[in-house]
Length: 254
Image 1 (tube, rainbow, N blue to C red):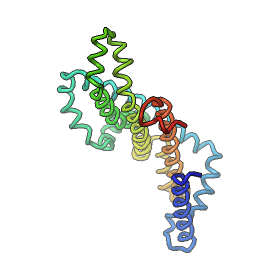
Image 2 (image 1 turned 135 degrees about the horizontal axis):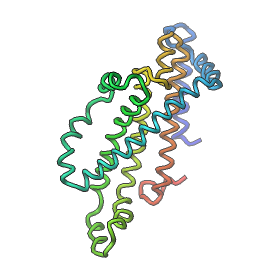
Image 3 (image 1 turned 180 degrees about the horizontal axis):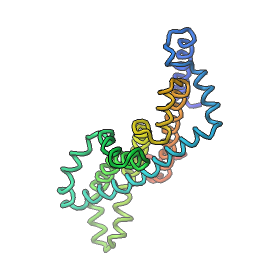
Image 4 (image 1 turned 90 degrees about the vertical axis):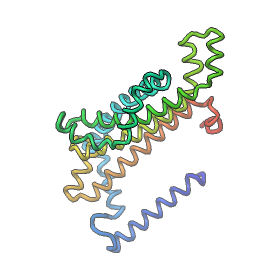
């Protein structure tokens, strides 16, 4: 095993061992159950339909929100970078709304739509919108003007310039934006499920916590963390495959 992989594994195992020892000695409060209890719940919970249903509901919210956020963010970012008038019209609005936490909109959305999946998807998509918008904006702006002018001089059509000049410049930014947006979307989806009592992993976690089922609460947190790690790893692998030609990925081809 590579040292870069071994060290985090050893560190995590040591921290879990310390947690287990402190919990067994009574040094930790009952709200922090032993690691073995959490592991036992995970082993049993992964064999039940209820947990997998909650995971599927969260993944559905995540997928729909990510798709909407990526499409809207990419279109808006490209338009702002390519068309100065659009940039002037939208820049003030973007700079005003971008720093506002998504959770601020939750009470309004609950009043308008109630505790529904639409609320979770809308707010999670809003969380994904900003990184995609900014990454696409910077990607389009980073197109080499010499290459762009050369393509125009040689008579390439707008579609050809888009495919052979603009797309290679934007793709690394776009890929990074999707990966960042994926993580943010999952975080927002779980948080909105928790706060809005919408069916999903977040609501399941909140229900366990409210009823004092601490091993199940921590187990749900572990499941959410593993879900984020797996999704991020999947997007990293896709990014490496899509950008094998890029200098930053040539030496990392698996």
